[in-house]
Length: 293
Image (cartoon, rainbow, N blue to C red):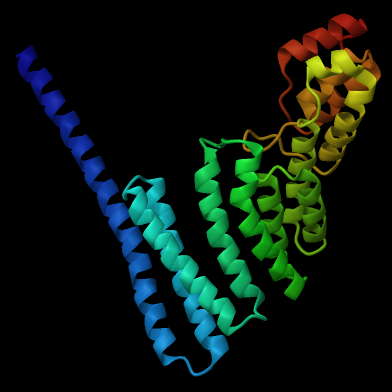
């Protein structure tokens, strides 16, 4: 009886797994079919277009659909590398055609930039972490940054152009440029403030590490990081697990520098904003400052 029950349970689990796998295949199929429809629709629009701007918009639409189909398929390992290259090439050909037909269109440059960015992201980010050398990442993100830059030159009010330009510069490790981009975006869209907070935090963490500080002098090396972390907090850093955390590294620096009053200020700001503080850092501050709050 126990064997029968165990067998039944295993069969039930197997059925669930098969159902989940089947559902997953169906979901992939339906999602990709949506882009197939968009490709067909854009192809008809290209043939029916009456002027260059209209035709350019249709080419850009089809290029976006090719790009999304390629990106999604590769992200879920549904196609081989050579098939991804083929679809990506079709996307770029359409975007190039859109720009040739309507070179004054910010949207045409933005659309091609998005395709380049998506490719760069696939090539350089794994499990949320950047991979490859700084030079390699810069090479991948450069074409995207170039197109987004052209888009905002044509239309400086295109806030998503500034946003994607900032993300492209971040991807390339060019944080100074990203901060400038997000500053421009912030004047047009509230999202820029959150991007800025994250970029300042990232720049704070990109400076000399502890060993460099010991060799070159802590005061000289920590000041830029302190300024960036403080600016990140001022801009409303979320530190929610999906973004950079300025609170804990700033607390660590202030404790190392024996600037205990400022360390406690960081703790109070974190507590007020309901941000998590590393218990080990807090205990070290308590011990070295001789205070409990």
